[in-house]
Image: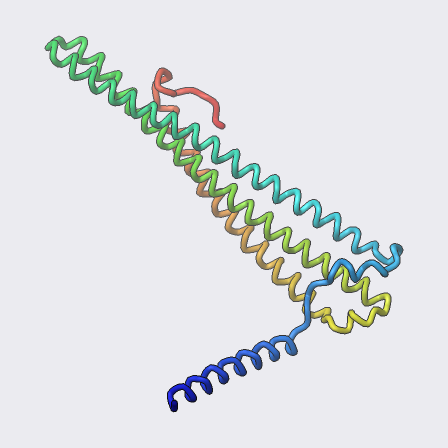
Length: 234
């Protein structure tokens, strides 16, 4: 009986503590978001900044969609590169078999020719593997750019909410008193910091991708044409 009573007191204490934390959180900060329905009574001639912010948000959302497509395009290109890499590995295996067959003849000329083909196939495989590595880095770049576009969309959202708040406040709507301009400004500032962080990650990933591409192009230039020594840089 004593244990059950103690357990009930403990559970009630947790519930009261959680309630106090929740209430303290609600009292200590005001919402940084405006319900679109609140804007219905704001005269159109007072919505200039809101309309501009809406257009900026639409553009930011479009950029997110474009970034998503770019990621998928990069992934498809990488898959093609991987298939080419598998084919290059198969060529090496085939040329190794050719060397073994030539060596079985004991004739120096066929052996030299077969070894030359194997060397070319191995160079082609190295270039193909470097191309796969480059495409993998390219995917990471596109994903980093997608994260940047997401961060920019968050800025557009925050700036739209700030514009809506100011428009609502300018009409004397009493509901604006339940909001804090400082919170809106803080949300904008935080979103912009995220954009700067994301932009730095994009810049770093671009450098990594550039190095990977340079490595592929160097190996490609050293590869006999029959084994992929020439071709377009996707």
